[in-house]
Image (cartoon, rainbow, N blue to C red; front, side, top):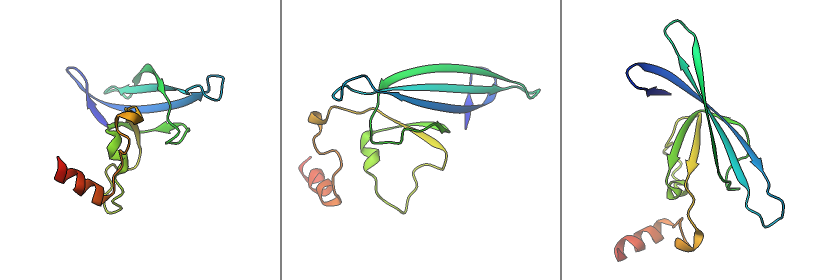
Length: 122
């Protein structure tokens, strides 16, 4: 993944380590701890490491494993795409989704017919 930073152009590689910790009771929400590691390479082949720690609520919708790749932020409805003919992203990416409260949108993933009906009533 190539990102532009400041004046110079450097190749940055993202390494993401996801650790999940349970908060005690069975009803407690789980917390996701994400460590983002940026490797900034220089012209002489050396690199500098920058680390950022993030924390948020963890969803059981995804895998709880270590991951490495480009970080992609997506809309929750993007997870509903079930078109097998299109690959939205190449191999080697980590998805980050802002999850909303279910009561705000009780049927986020609609069938094709449901999408057509929703479009006709908009």
